[in-house]
Length: 295
Image (cartoon, rainbow, N blue to C red; front, side):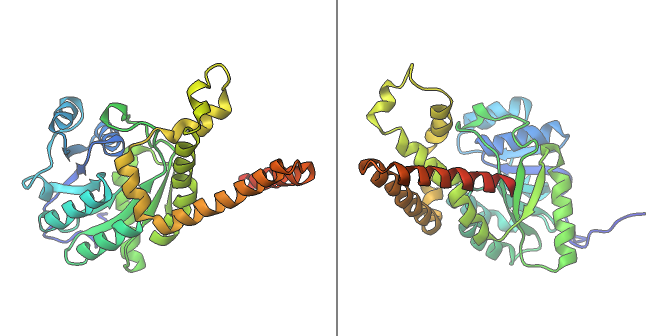
């Protein structure tokens, strides 16, 4: 029995399981390696030509250009937010009917608002995505095929009827199967950005600010797991994170305000020598962490 996909028009021109990737940084390069190992044909575009040529030795089958864009069943936008949106707007007319386009960018309102609007004009589908995986390093040199194994994938689907959405999401899950995601979580763009401001962006801000203490330059011999845990993401790509922070400025600023207020309470208790209040604050933090782990 043949299962018909209502989201794939008869005039679709793509080659099944052929995938295009914009950007071969940590995310895009890891997708390329995982999908290539899974048997997909991978075509890519990257700002730095030498990186693309390196990837084409073992992983990438060819260049993502005007000729190959129409042949891709899935296109992954893995560049910076503005670059990805601009590229999609310029290449939208080349994308095959029935194809799926996703992004893997760390903010969703900025990207989804613009990309949904572009996709509405064409017979292909845009789905906002954000893999909850990565390292403190950036660039193709640090990519790996198992980057996404058991990681959650947050998905922001477009407005469409339930059957069409189910069909598109099932196709997407099948196309991304070689990546080994542990779960797919549906979200709105706003919910994603609100939560990611706390779980990811605030952590990068705090870590980056923490190492600005003069003590960081003389920590050797006096640091262990706590220091390593807190400073791991102090190393970052400042150009990319500047764009991500400003695209989510409202939620991130709110989270920074909350942590400043909380830190002030600890400082006040310590400055006052108030052991009872300090114990209360520490016990509260311990309790809230335990509660969060049980959810």
